[in-house]
Amino acid sequence: MKYAILGLALLFSTALSAQNKKSSTTMYRHVVMFKFKESSSKESVDKIVNAFIALKKEIPVIKAFEWGLNVSPEHQDQGLTHCFVVTFASTEDRDGVYQDHPAHVKFKNLVGPHVEKVVVVDFKVEN
Image (tube, one colour):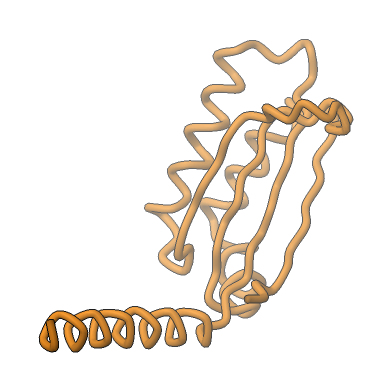
């Protein structure tokens, strides 16, 4: 019993230490939401989504990438259908590398003619 309690204490201490280390790392999120034009085909939208996903492999400063389709029941989306979340370690990575990276510039040129509305929100992750 004594060893089980010590083991649980050690496990809890290790998990807490890992959580504290994780929360001390500053991260920045770049959230991009699109409302595509009705005239854009499904194939065009799929090509854009795949091109956005590919940026993770092409731009090394991207620490994480997630995306999904809007499924909110609140109907406050203003027609925005696609949401992408890109994570960076610093604003310098986002502003100095990502924004001007040739792959990102190419992506913006690809998506531009197909979007009716774009919303971008950047924030520092707070824990």
